[in-house]
Image (cartoon, rainbow, N blue to C red; front, side):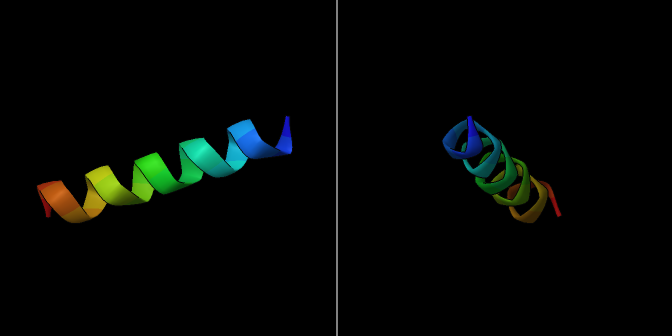
Length: 20
């Protein structure tokens, strides 16, 4: 479960940097 949260956090930050 923690791995899923970590995955989503990384994905969210990656998209944030990509769209900035």
